[in-house]
Length: 386
Ligand SMILES: Cc1ncc(COP(=O)(O)O)c(C=O)c1O
Image (cartoon, rainbow, N blue to C red):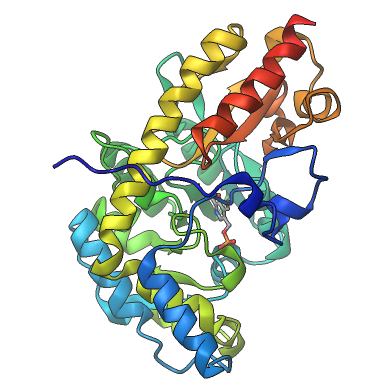
């Protein structure tokens, strides 16, 4: 069955938005930095939020907002992952969930493995939880990126206590294979370490690649792991504040139960309502249309780069709407986003923030209209020719 790609909203409407993407820079700048997307909300989300606004239903999130059943249903439909709703807990956002779990599983000063180049808040979050970042970069090749299992093993052997996994990985869009996830879980189990898997980009995996939730990878993954995720990236709900934490088994469930009450209370009611709507079957068709639009954009970006920035290096991601692009051949310094903003008036995410591996790189958000993507790459391409 062919799916109609979702159309992004027109620029004049987007400019009326008040979120970071649209207010950080002036109107002459095209924004491609922060991970917000340019589509209208899924109809079921609009419906529940509109109803809540009409009712003035803006109080505290209730004790059971329906998030656990909605997430378990979504996980089963999309990935055949059988989640016990009792293993699902909620909080304000994914990074809040990660920091609270880390606080439960490490002691102050313990080392936590992260895999650069990686989503910059991973570094801060480990520190916020009292940990120390242990860098084990992804292994890069012409074919893509993968977990450096030997590097992780060495880190755990020398005392690191936890692994903060990004699955799929931001910024490379790597969808880790079931084999590498199972192997990671085995290594973690051997050293008594915990794996926390951030799976916020999971629903945005492009066929034929299949997303494997870490906790579905193996029995040992369920014994060592937690997943933290949200509908917020896929459905553009970041401002509404709701994410889910999933325990791999009874011991982790007990730890999540023992979190301070405040962790759950920080969940926004609109966040919970919209996550339930996003995860419901009513939103499946919208998600299919979104994926069709994003899939076309990730390939369009490859064409645009080949035409306007032929020395750029870019491997289309297997998941997500973020493109990791190496512009170092252009000699625009360690952080090309600075020159691109100044001279092309296009705001990209700064590669070096993701780790030293991001030197000479930028991250481009292609969750937008194809015309806008074209204009941005043309503007940057003009810089390369000047
Ligand atoms: C991998 C990853 N984790 C977490 C987040 C942020 O999620 P939240 O706003 O729910 O903390 C993002 C946002 O782009 C992300 O890419």
